[in-house]
Amino acid sequence: MSLFSRVVLFTFLSVAFISNAAGKIVDNDEFIITAEFDKKEYFSNESGLLTIWLYTTNPNLNGFEEIFPVSVDKGEFAYFAKVNEMPRATHKKIKDKEYAAYPLGVYAIMFKDEGKYAINAGSYRLSVNEPVVVRDPFWGTVRTHRSEFVDVQGEKTRVKVKKLPMVEGITSFSGAVGDYKIEVTIPRGEIIINEPATAIITIEGEGLIGDDTMPDYHDSFKQGCVLKSVSDSNDYLYNGRCVVSRKVLECEFIPTDLKNCLISPVEFSFFNPKSGKYEILRSEPVSVNVKSSTVRITPIDI
Image (tube, rainbow, N blue to C red; front, side, top):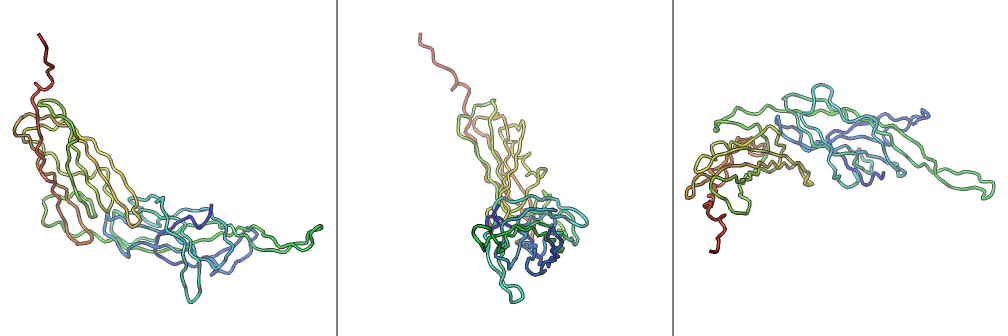
């Protein structure tokens, strides 16, 4: 596995103690593990990115293997998942020395409780192809490579999680933290009075929407229709900059009025860390075109 294709997230620079399998002590600034958060501090339930980087002055790096994963000393992540996409390898100057930088992993993270957390960046076994000169009985002096393994232990980094401010300006709070938008749509097709139909509520945006986090939709199906059942699904993805959530609710309802069937605005409340305020989204009302059951009657020729 090439290091050039891997990625990492987190915010701390750690000098690592390194030794190979034979117990040889390696210069401790030849390999450095760093942890890097995308922000210095977070609100409770706010999503973030953690990247683990390897800095090295050794040009013969060949690969790596995780020995111990990222962990929290006290407490736990409310959400922790590896992101498939990685940043590109790059270069960085540290204490006037030029290092090649390779990402080792990127993780989407979230903390529920306020406080200060100590994060362990984990440890890795590196494969290094060291150049050597050997004496071959047929070819004489030959320059080749010998594989060595080096264990690198990263140090801890700390991150602060702030308590959400007191709820003001809204009557209820869903618990979501981020920046979202909401939409209600009706799939194409005829909708017949007194027969099941479907409305789709979609909430998406930056942040992590929990499985139990829902919009206020119950009062939206009371004008010329009756709500029967709701099923929901969550998807998360990394857009190259942040974690994006998409929650979809499939709402089965029965239209009861031919001329006055309306899905009223669906509300979704959340805390926006960008503005530092609680906000309420309201979808546009959706007028439903309901048809009589007579459209299903097939004419009979006599």
